[in-house]
Amino acid sequence: MPRHVVATLRELPPGGRKRVAVDGRDIVLFNVGGEVFALADRCPHQGGRLSEGRLVGLVEAAEPGRYTWSRGGEIVRCPWHGWEFDLRTGRSRCEPSRLRTRAYDVSIEPADPGPVETFAVTVEARRIVVDVPGR
Amino acid sequence: MDDLRSGGIDCDIHPAVPALAALLPYLDAHWREAVVQRGLDELRTVDFPPSAPLSARPDWHGASSVAAVGAEVLDPFGTQIAICNCLYGVPMLFTEDMAAALARAVNDWIAREWLDQDPRLRAGIVVSPQNPEFAVDEIERCAADPRFVQVLLPVADELPPGRRAHWPIYAAAARHRLPVAFHGGTTSKHAPSAVGWPSFVTEEYVGRAPAFQGALTSLVCEGVFARFPDLRVVLLGSGVTWLPAHLWRLTKFWRGLRMEVPWLDRPPAEIVREHVRLTAQPFDLPADPAQFGAILDQLGSDALLLFATDYPHWHFDGTDALPAGIAPALARRIMVDNPRATYPRLTETVS
Image (cartoon, rainbow over all chains, first blue to last red):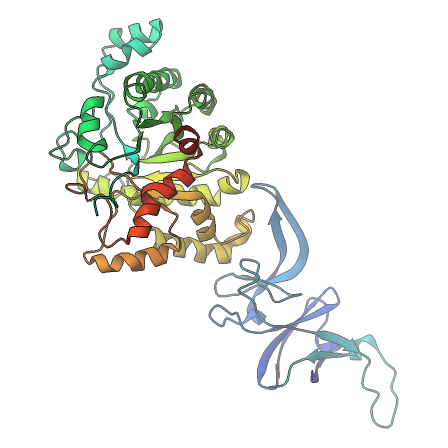
């Protein structure tokens, strides 16, 4: 799967988000507590930009009235109709097997050493790489 | 066609208490005297005004007599089993104790004067939703008689039906494999329409469908079916064709607001298709019977509809109780298979 350098961690600090285009596709990156996620920036419902959505936690209930909250910031709500998507899988919370947006594999790799000179590698300079299937 | 339209299970007929005096033998000494001393002579609700055409078909006069019900509805339809649903005015009372006493009286009256008189008859249990504890006691008392096959509640009561105050009733019903049947009509504790008090019977009657929508939404969203996975709900006289659009709307908004009701772990339309059944009279048909198939497709299941005449209410003439345009296999499902699947007690007592 073709790999694309899309940003540096300096551009995407924890709590940050960034919209990038790879091979004609819009992708949104979220840094949640140092972990970076990449989703297609398009809600499968009507195409809302998830990059403009709020990040929330996961609300579940084993039975009526017993709310549990976990995974703070790992769910994005589409800004148009509030559908929730799991940043780790791209699956919706409402109908996960049927409604989903694409989630891309992300890796964080050392800063590009450059062709000649070596620079001090800092965390901020590390590169975010997204695997995007070819067309 | 005659074969197709006979031998069914009629899930909604309405025997009528002729007058409160008929219940006196079934009240204890205190309540018997109280009814007489207070001058109570009638608890008929305003839901079916006696002279309104929909209240009784012109050729159906006998709702207070078991012999007439046999001649007017059981025999002509070749009915195998018919379920008597007689809410009377019990849920409309404001006093819990009187409501509980009258619920007991109505149930004993039905058992002695109807179920004992015609082996084709079954009944819903009248309870006092004013006090869920008393309602549970009455369910426990009546459940010993297998001819009681469901619990009856009014669709528009003081609280939305999904609220947890009612849950003891649902727990008892589920425990005894009794579906909970909501019947159209209001306890008059709120305006029967969401926009206020209507002027005309027509408005009130048409407004029952939205009341059923509200009740259904409440049951689903409050998590009644998540808490009581074995519970079945029957909507009596709700009309049917509003359901697909309502489920589209409910499911659509649930997708975006799921976190309010996270106990709903699948689309509300699926939950309703599993847990809720509707009687097929009245039906609110399109003018063109060919469109019936489209409605069925939209309902998404052929298990939802239960045959009913809604005797003595006037929705159709002759024996045309099934919607026009229905295929024979589906007619059989509606008339026999679906009622049997909905009411476990029917298969226990009918062999």
